Image (cartoon, rainbow, N blue to C red; front, side, top):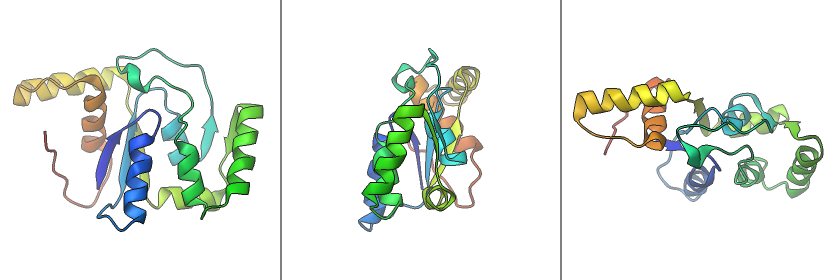
Length: 159
């Protein structure tokens, strides 16, 4: 299992490909900030673009995770026509809901977590106090997700 701090979903998409190629990849936890299109897509099937918010984790300050299109392609079984229709609706309406079968296919591999600036900064303080290790905000989002996302398997944080 992996926790991936993500904005554009690139590393998480790579994790899905590794899993499909037979890699030892279980669940992938996608951790993002309050610009949470990845979280909303994975948790509710809500691909809607909202106003971008400035955060303490600027590499994640996006509202369109362009690599999600790859996720949809692979999770739809390679149905390029269906994915093209979803993306066209998203472009025209700035919002689209994933059909339930596609959302369930996404959720077979992915879990997500949206982390606020306050939670990010608190995680940075806690790790510094406990370990004397200065996390950057993006890594702190991943650590917060690691600590708070329900899971049944043991997880090891390697720094």
